[in-house]
Image (cartoon, rainbow, N blue to C red; front, top):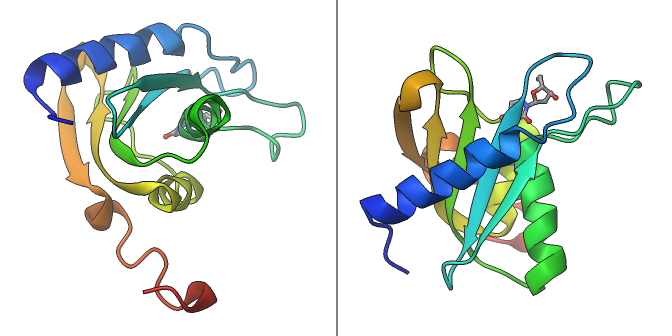
Length: 136
Ligand code: THU
């Protein structure tokens, strides 16, 4: 799967659209995410908050759940996360670990006006599985 500019643009557009569906009555902070499988299939997510606060699901993890439930075992190659922030939004630690479970995707973080920064999975979470269940 080639990660070219046109693909990133389309996936980012999907993420903005998913963000509109965010359920964020407590924080007022809407996030959209798209995760892309090795075959180039994009799946979207938005954050889904809860009155308990602790049960809130981030957009990234909702997108991963959507992908796995739809395709089964998957390998992630690209992730886009969008929010209306001055600096591009940064995934929480839990989401970084969940993304790393399914591959070593390139991750594009997008803020207001389309400003973006891109990171490798390794940059966002070095050594995500070393030592756990004997994995390298
Ligand atoms: N949130 C996400 O969905 N993804 C991120 O990368 C950052 C934070 C959500 C969780 C919560 O609903 C709200 O944003 C405020 O933290």
